[in-house]
Length: 93
Image (cartoon, rainbow, N blue to C red; front, side, top):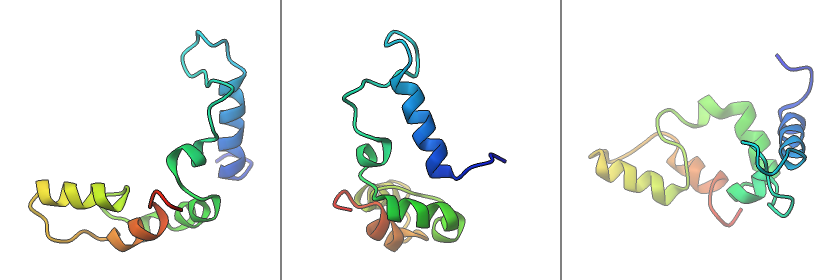
């Protein structure tokens, strides 16, 4: 267990990646947006998901349209958490 909050850890990882030699694996370009912004997830939604992830999702997680596509490919009519994907993981959050 880390002695700090997950969002602080993610900030630390992001900060560290921005200070690595650009030729090193894991380096993040200085002009790259923060991770949650790149993923299109609001910090408020990320914290909610982080605290309750397993109660929201069971099998598939992602942008709702991609989850629907995966359901179609797997011949599933429904997946637990689709509504939460629409709320928390839409590209407009």
